[in-house]
Length: 284
Ligand SMILES: O=C(O)CCC(=O)C(=O)O
Ligand SMILES: [Fe+2]
Image (tube, rainbow, N blue to C red):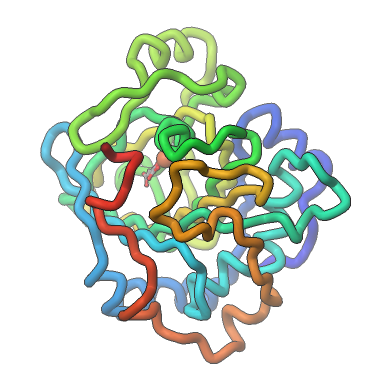
């Protein structure tokens, strides 16, 4: 894992564009460990949820709230990741800073070859608004590429700078929540539409209000990624009961080397708070 703070230029770029790519964030050895766990840990497949897109293609994801001592938990809790997030989130109380970064949830996105479905244009805050979080600048997502993500296998797409629009109206699109097509079309008149291709080990930080989508995976290659969502402790989700308050519990930060050197646990079979589809208020 790289071991250096984000630069002022990177921070400025995030605020301007609504996203920031950090290439080579993870080493090949770290990516290998994450990939093998994704394939081998039975908790991941056991708790996978299928989400259909509007054409009936199926995306698989496993979502959990409390980050544990498994390799994914150690990554989301790593000093490098948490300090980077801290630099990017709005901070009402600069004195406390890193100690106020919380983990809302993480999900392992499994876009399988030929099967993995598309995601409609949306803002993550389109979902989270329904959880009654009030402050979108205190929330963000971090996508870690576990495999290469390309145009062919359905990489993420963003509308650069669209986070500055604030929250856009969302409605249902199949089993997903989608942003108002009218506002997406208007945004695309002046803002740049970009395909975010990532190499395994690259990391994409993105604002909760940036408009993003992805296409189905029509290729022979899997597109796996982990998306971790972070929140500042001061931002209370008043309708966030499902997450047993993980979103306002400061992260127990671990050293960067924990991912490779600690004796990682499995993703807990029993008692781990994986999401079931029925429990998600933002999908209702
Ligand atoms: O994995 C993707 O392509 C997008 C998923 C996404 O945006 C989400 O789950 O909020
Ligand atoms: Fe999203």
